[in-house]
Length: 267
Image (tube, rainbow, N blue to C red; front, side, top):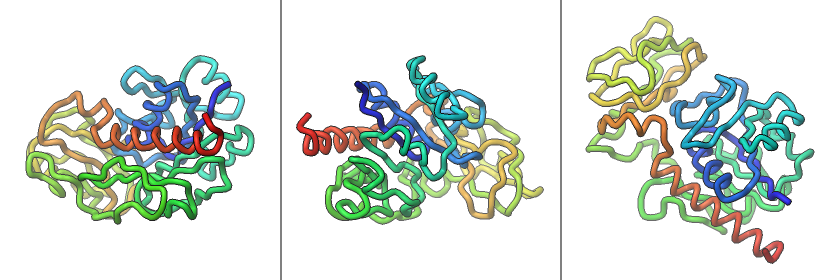
């Protein structure tokens, strides 16, 4: 008998969680929106929504169109990704746990009655009230910590430094409109290179490095939205593998599920 886990969201953090749980023997399903705004596409199972399938570090995810597809994908020892923004599939699957890894910085509708175990990832959730546990996502001493009462640290809006660069690593939409990509994930870029354009306005890299993430070509975006990031370390492998942050958060999610399962069911 499998313990089924539903993960809301399929971006890079959610993918790290899904990968860890899958490797530990859980039956995992991810839910997504119809047009994911995922930046680290090549390290995210959300890319299965865009391309039909995705593989990250040897684990294969496939887009599911219905509940029958979900079971078929599980039978093939793969991870299904289902477009189900409201997580209605839980009514059919009755999962052991729901992990909200949408990372919207606010609760998008996850509550304790949805499953025996509910976990919120990052800020926007109160452990002990709307969910059973919260996983810290801010870089620093507490990254990956499981919180059973209270909140994760507030979002700073400032990414962690890499080789001294922080906000300079980010690419943001200069206007509302449809993104047209010029470079692709994994390409090396120089400061000043035009990586993409939105509504005819250029998006230029502020630093030298490897283009680690970029929203899919043709996506509707809005001014100020994060649409990409440049890694100054220039290691192309980092574009397609799970990050240290994702692994830390995944460890916290696994710990929370195992601990809460033991508390509730004695196993």
